[in-house]
Length: 240
Image 1: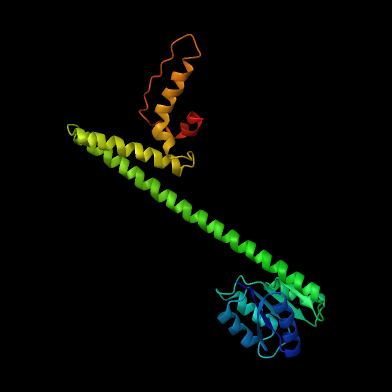
Image 2 (image 1 turned 180 degrees about the vertical axis):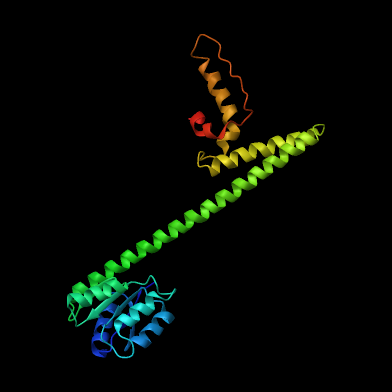
């Protein structure tokens, strides 16, 4: 999908020339001839970058930038000033308002292409970082919810087995549930990559001890007290 650039400039010849150059580089380009129409076009088109002149009728570039930064839909959109004015105060004014870059007319084609490419790359990196952080936040929320749910389930099972000790089927069910809870908690805590590790740990350890007895002269005996499970904090260490 092509990246979209909005060019806002009241000098229509300059705007169209820039648009032609950017289209040749593979961008989709929208053009507005004044600040007011440019701002509303930005809201409608949601461009990936805005290239905007400073001196324009209705709304100048500073007004457009301020409006863009105050709008939720365009707040993070890269904004580059393109203007014939090039004194240091103009530069500081634009950057203080939240501009990402500042190009002076007449701008070299290579410089224009370089600035746009860099700003789009930086913006994409920020978008991906934001998505990563959001995924981590959602993952943590899910983790906390599941941990609370599992803890509540374990407490309920313990209560039922204490209240009805004569029901053998309930005891078997409770054992299975608690074993499953242990496995899920290990996965949530990031200490276990294979869900089968806990369930088969005891059997695999017995098998390895059996093999080891073939290499030694004395008897090895494993006292298995964990019954296919063991303390969460020791899972990975014990298995290794």
